[in-house]
Length: 87
Image (cartoon, rainbow, N blue to C red; front, side):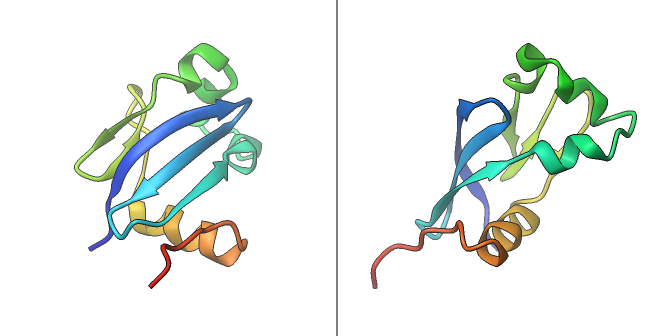
């Protein structure tokens, strides 16, 4: 099972994610904000957006919003933004 091992704020709505298999990628969360749900609206605030943390390998925020490592990994991979370690 893939897990997030490190998350680093980059700029605006971007977070660099490092995964347990050694791969990494920069995730742009602007698509998430378009949804305007009760959980995602808090991310409009830059200070709140930067309060993310990793819990049990998932990316989380204090308001209960969380994204599984697997879903973020697949999204980065599908978008061609996942960098995998050399074999």
